[in-house]
Length: 132
Image (cartoon, rainbow, N blue to C red; front, side, top):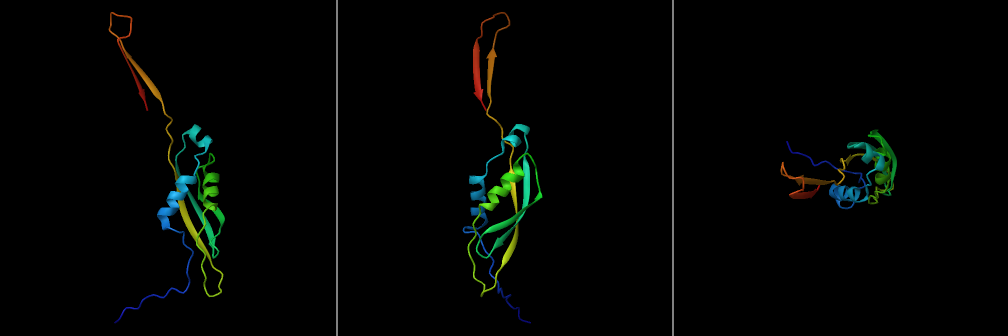
């Protein structure tokens, strides 16, 4: 029995550079919402969106959100994506895709100062300042 190669008649729109380029674009354009930073929110926003045959993203929908402005920011960034145009013998094609955008907890830089003193002496002996 010979195996047959599957034929793909429809060409789906693809992002130039692939998934790695999508990740780089999102990390460069994603702004961590101030409300999420203040509340220490981290996690993932799961989205579903439609890409037309012209490469335009539309109908972005949040499947699983975080709140605190993260959902709105994830939708904003996904709408900025531009996929490549495709020709399918005159057929109009819309492709549904899913994506997960991660919001990692942002740690604000802190400055710690340690002062070492001798028990009997009131003046500081050694002072260390550490920036985290």
